[in-house]
Image 1 (spheres, rainbow, N blue to C red):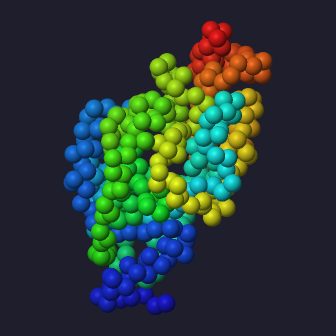
Image 2 (cartoon, rainbow, N blue to C red):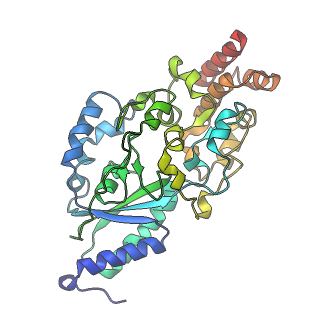
Image 3 (tube, rainbow, N blue to C red):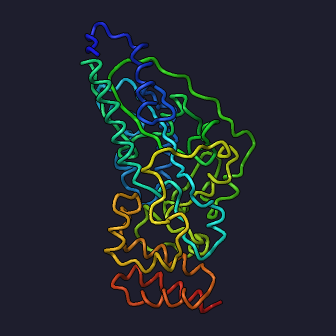
Length: 357
């Protein structure tokens, strides 16, 4: 197909082609929005001002670049938001894993290959398609990799609404999906935002183990198990350790309880299939992995980014919450003299917890 000459660009036709290409590249939904996030900026600044981002300093560092796309990428006129299903097929039911204190619960999105790599590759291919179509194109792709208000942009683009747990929801797909964006300089026609459909439901708020959803649409990251097990690098506060249960990487409770996720569809992407039985692995087994095993087994996984030390810290907490057994005690004692003070501290807590029982 020949390039469209700049002054001949039919943006309605181009937008339709972009939607078709997006589906060809494996995205289940695509929408287009403008760059006006002024309505969300006040809430962002209040959230940061109250310190609810915890130690995620990058959230504050970028300031309003997150809510002003044209300051992040000068010349940006539109944002294309895209959605890709992430639920791995045939994974063990999350509630079953949580009820089995000897197993390790890992957030369902992290059971396969790192979504950053998968989405970035597809987004880059889509951007190349647009570039080949018109020489006017200038843009950049994002997938949870820069100061981007992806949920708000996706809401404005009409591919879902913000749920009370602060995640994007879709009537046909629930919240089990990844989001990606393309910032670009073309005045494409924009889509209409969706109306919310949460009604009076508050199940996500009520189920949160640590009460991190302090109000509808408002999350205190400092209390969130996903933050504590992934983003937070230090000593997990004592008050939250018993509440973490057997969650060693992330927490999906607010999504698993959501009625809209009864409509969620499994991913067809081979990259998102469960690796190394991580949907149903034993805590003792995973705690025995040395650093080389961690690195080799989790290479290409989102989990790899937390590193072996934090992996052991998280599992030590889960073992402290596990049913007492000789295997659990032996596993903890095997790491009692670990070189890392962080690991030793959490192992000592877990052993003391079992001694107290």
